[in-house]
Structure formats: C-alpha cells, structure tokens
Image (cartoon, rainbow, N blue to C red; front, side, top):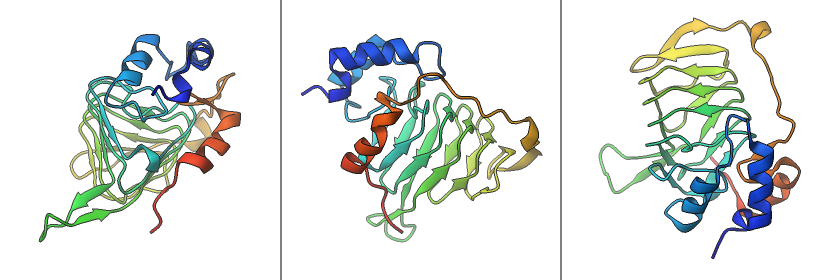
Length: 201
C-alpha cells in the first residue's frame, strides 16, 4: 500500500511547492521510498539511509533526517527535531542504546534538537541529548551530553563548545510553503495527533 502522502496529487503538489527549499521532495527518491525500506517515513529519505521507529520521530518544517546518504536515524527512544534543521550525510541520531552490563536491555532516552540547527557529516547524537536552537554540530563530532542553551558550534569527541554564536546575527528564515516532510504545515497537527507519539520519560 502506498502511503497517502505519496499519492500522485499530493506528491505533485509537494514537489512543486518544496522546489528550491533545503529539503526538496524529489520524484525519484519519493517513488523509491514508497516502494522500499523507509516507506513509513513521512519525509524524504535517501535510499542508503536507515530510519527506524518513525512513529516516535517528530520533524519540523524543512527537516528531513536521512535525506542525505548514509544516515542512521534510530527513533526508539523518541526524537524531536525543530524547524529548518539541516542534517548532513552519514549522520547518526540514536535515541536508544544497550545497557553496559546486559546488552539485552535497551535504555531509551529521547533526543531534542532545536530549530535552525545543523548536524555536519559523520556527526553522532547519542541518547538523552538536548540541543538548543542554532546549534551547529561539526563534522565527526560525537555529542554525548546536552547543550540546551543553543547558539553554539560543537566539535570533537566528546563534543564540546568551540564557538559561541551571536543570537542577534542568527537568521530565522521561513519558506513560502512550509512542509513537515510530505505533510503541509496546516495538516501536520492532525497528522501528528493521529499517527505520532513521543515516548514519555
């Protein structure tokens, strides 16, 4: 069964209205996704990326984790990503991990990433991390703890603040047509209430 957001009339509209945005809907990827492994995702996902537990992942406007190649987005513990956040290639966002003393036990901790953030290539965000808005995670950084204040550039392993951003210089841009993946913003509240739920705790 084809997801409702990939029906021809809806797909044509989302392709047209997201053209020129940071997360455009492309026909080829959408069709491949509709037939393939990541078909449950309600946003565009590259065929080489893996997304799990879609029902516990909330994405903001123009935010598509896994749109770039080679990403691993594991939503078991819950992931909430703000509007206009960019996620580079081969990024890992992991909201559940094995217990160190009993690897049969999963420890789930939700991840929150603020709006207008940017996760660079090969960066990894681990369970329980909260990143405030306008957080830049440098390429290859491993984020093991929270930086909820935002307006920072993080780098290293484990990630640390390597630069502060001036909030007055940070631009809160908006697109003419706003989409949460394939879902127009006006329809997203009802979609979220019906199909999505972040874990509690």
